[in-house]
Image (cartoon, rainbow, N blue to C red; front, side, top):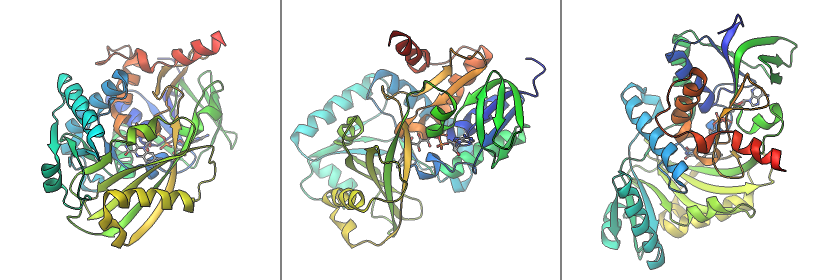
Length: 376
Ligand SMILES: Cc1cc2nc3c(=O)[nH]c(=O)nc-3n(C[C@H](O)[C@H](O)[C@H](O)COP(=O)(O)OP(=O)(O)OC[C@H]3O[C@@H](n4cnc5c(N)ncnc54)[C@H](O)[C@@H]3O)c2cc1C
């Protein structure tokens, strides 16, 4: 490493920046983390905290599964306020057509070593009695879990600080590149390598990054212990996540350790304001009530929004940025950044330090977008 003040300067103290700081620190590097706000205050504060294996593509599967294993390894060290709970996911099939998808997913996961259980209508009803009668069945993925994202980010960063990582909060970055970070107050930080982990703020700092904001709404109820036992997601969720233009909602409900029910979720492009959109909220809650009519009688205590950082090919950008030898990216995690933060950190730090990654990294390399730019 050079005589720069730090080996690594990370912009962004969301869960991705925090996980990277934790991983760099574990490997003995001198690190500073800079954020214009507080720890975990961006998408991380808004996220649902579902730690989920997804099979949209082989690359998505590999990163989510790898990351889930890393969360499981860390599990015993997580403090209580991270609320890690391996409650499992049930993908809910409302009709026979969706049961075909249950069977496909079951085979797909089993071939890749993920335990699953296909549920018929009666078993589903037994597992989740508050679902509407008449559901066709579902798929239980017992290793999936949930956690409370801002506390998870705080835990990772505090761990990193115990290894000497410095954290500068309330410092807005105006420019970065060529081993330098210029803060809005005129101060400069020098580092051998910079990591842009600024989530939806990352394209403002690295030109040529194609990342769009994808707004989401969530609602949390009062305490109703035992109402819900697993994270429930409608199989139509995948259609919602795939939609690249129109607004969409999908039933997604999570049991919190407090007995509260966290209800999602919506997806919108082009909605830049962070206020709750009443029509969107009503649409999302109606969808949830179609699946769980008992939600209608519940009091909600808070609703909020957040912005996912979405790339065109739905995969994050993890690795070097070819236009600047000092710059690495860890951004573009859309709706999976809580899950994939630990895997992202591992493969990013492997690249910086020259270690051999445990999963193939090619699908996440930013060179795939810089190549596209060169062709255009
Ligand atoms: C409604 C919703 C539900 C979700 N549910 C889930 C889920 O169940 N499971 C899951 O895995 N993922 C989920 N996600 C996605 C997940 O929340 C994100 O992918 C993840 O939080 C991204 O983390 P990050 O650290 O990259 O970004 P962020 O948390 O946004 O952090 C970026 C940080 O960079 C800082 N920053 C930006 N620009 C600058 C600048 N110029 N100078 C200094 N600092 C800067 C910001 O202040 C911020 O703290 C959800 C997201 C939303 C919106």
